[in-house]
Image (tube, rainbow, N blue to C red):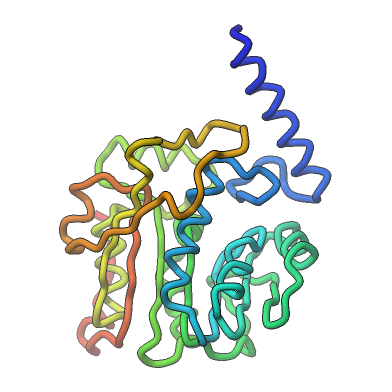
Length: 260
């Protein structure tokens, strides 16, 4: 084993110990500022994209995890941010590490949001809906709390072929492994307008998402480029990014959705 490989193993052990000391689950897909590697910077860059929509608005973050993203949205100008996550350890971590006025975290399932949650100008969710058994139900739940005209900004894995489908099916946490066009069809049942964006890493410094060491990248190094929804499955992207607004027509909203 090379010296570099040995150092990676040692660093992975340190990262795991840090997570455990902070009360986080050892085996999960949650990322946190405890391990500020390339993977964390890529996830944080998604919240930088979300911040385009939040200034002066009340925001719901579905699947807020360890809270770093919700905290960024509050610091970016959101008047009030509520983060919900079904993992109690993540919510406890977020509540203790990000104590800001107008920011709070709750234990809740996206498929059964609390009735008294209130209404929001914007709803965001990063890499969470693929973890759900019933994403259509979660969208319906979310719509009860989203003010008319407010955007729902969603990021899910870019499943575009059998290889990427198989890769996601092997991830034990992923329950709804839809192709990107299936996500688009599902969203169009609830929203009049669905826009798509590519999430791109820096071309001159490709990230290594398995690297356990602190990253030399920053969220600003990642780029988001709008493209037609129909083209999202034909180009490389780190995540399938959707920005949804408006109400779908009654005929569209009543359409059935089936995997194919």
